[in-house]
Image (cartoon, rainbow, N blue to C red; front, side, top):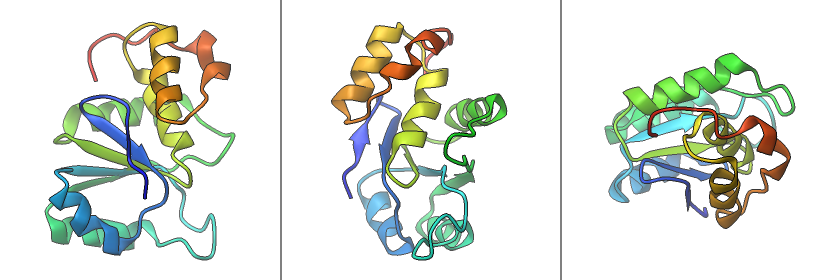
Length: 140
């Protein structure tokens, strides 16, 4: 599992397993956001399984599923609220980390260039979103 930081508060990664959660707590993560809808693939653990592992490890957990290509403003708002409410650092995941990165970018403060550059350094090309970035206020 390759964990990529996007800010001091948030890192993203690909699909995690319930068995990974305790190690994430040891690494210092305090919260997990799941952006992958249940049932997207047959080998994927359910949100409930990861939520149970998070609870056992003392981590907060939030489920904000995003169907690929169907991102809604309410999901961006829910992601921003989760980052504001949950103890950090937070780890967000989906299949590859791209949806989690996109949710971060759409609510992140800063210029479009700085947001795209940060995502690129983490391995995610968000240049196609440039016109929608850099409008958030506040710090996450």
